[in-house]
Length: 250
Image (cartoon, rainbow, N blue to C red; front, top):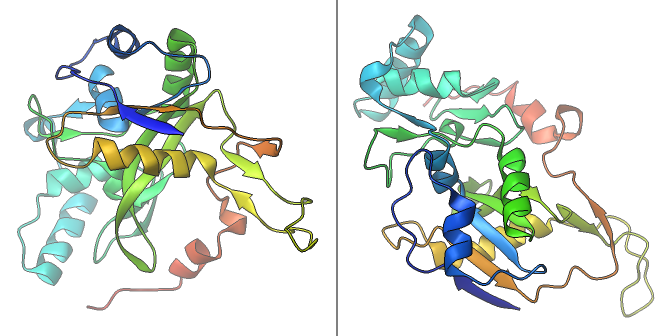
């Protein structure tokens, strides 16, 4: 497997044809997988916000005041308002905002970012990342993964994850196959799109590298069953259910 960044992409702005910009710089093969950072997808789709245009409601003000009292750091209630606007559920309101997005991704601050947004204050996550991935996949003639970075329970640090995908299953299912000792695998479902997103993130990075699109070449899915289930449903998410009974007291 070979992984390389798409070179010399310009600063992406609203209305830019992201697929064409990638296609101009890489001879895309049908079996390549193109990983594109959610930030540039959102910029191309105009998913940016200026805080001057936001009016904080009473809930946002309450959240910001509590976070400020807990952390000792000034919190802008307008930011909290944007987080609430971009969320379908608020799982935690302290010591940080843990939310569910409309497409099912659970992440801090609804995935809203302040980094690498020269023309606005904030960049939001794409509203429908898999729909965008489908459009890019059709334009490029290859599978596409829209990536983001987020933290992990029980571990320090962030890693790349998939928030949208098209042209390949989200996971490969090893259940019913056998290990080298003849034992049948009963629970192993590998989140392939997350693993590929993490590989791409090693090149796209988190800072000022300017390489938000990455090509993964010669990856083989193999002769496995596939599934597009990636985000846990509420009924199967025991951690989420436990959070409903938990309260942060500082």
